[in-house]
Amino acid sequence: MQRLLVVDDEERIRDIIKEYIREEYQVEEASNGVEALNLFKKNEYALVILDIMMPKMDGWSVCRNIRKSSSVPIIMLTARGEEYDKLFGFELGVDDYIVKPFSPKELLARIKAIIRRSNDSTTPKDESEAFYFDGLVVKISERNVYVDERRVELTPKEFDLLAFLVRHPNKVFTRAQLLDQIWGYDFFGDERTVDTHIKMLRESIKPYRKYIVTVWGTGYKFEWGV
Image (cartoon, rainbow, N blue to C red; front, side, top):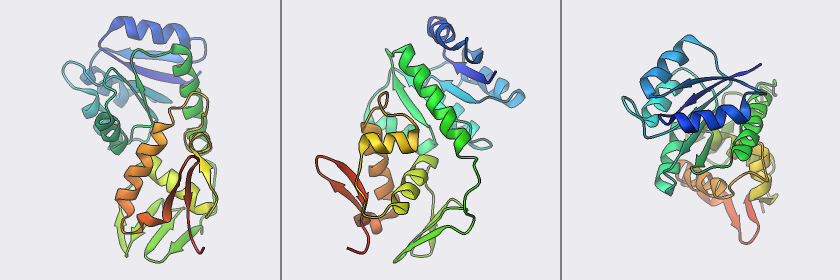
């Protein structure tokens, strides 16, 4: 049984999560950020559920420390739902962001989807796969992106989104389709997550942001050679 780490200073929240997921996952819990990092250093987890506002060390700091050594999926579960907070979380490498109050059933669905996608990402891919668009270069095997020969830093989900789009040039995808392909869920996903990542991605690859085109009323496409 896969092991999850649930980090929240509210015991009631931890109990609700355990109640809904304990039949499918082994759950360990921490009530503050320092305790969470100590557990993370000693054990292997399939996913971390992380609150932001906690004593001793906040969730942002915990996430930043985890990302120094691990790409384990992280779900932020918090009362802070402003776009700034979501952008900041995604920039740190958060995989998903759920705002309290939340549906335990939805949380379980997202946990399953993220873990599934995380497992799928370990499947071997074509090591020579790379894409060149003027000064924009996307090297799939290396997970590197270059803008005018300068490597730019993307979050894991930014890279996954760009890689998916460049593999399907000029094809329009709805937000729901992109959620399903990149995040691994559709019905339970918040479509604004896609918009947020598109915004971040455009900022990262400018001046080539023009290739990521908004198709009003539908979604997005990577436009090339038309």
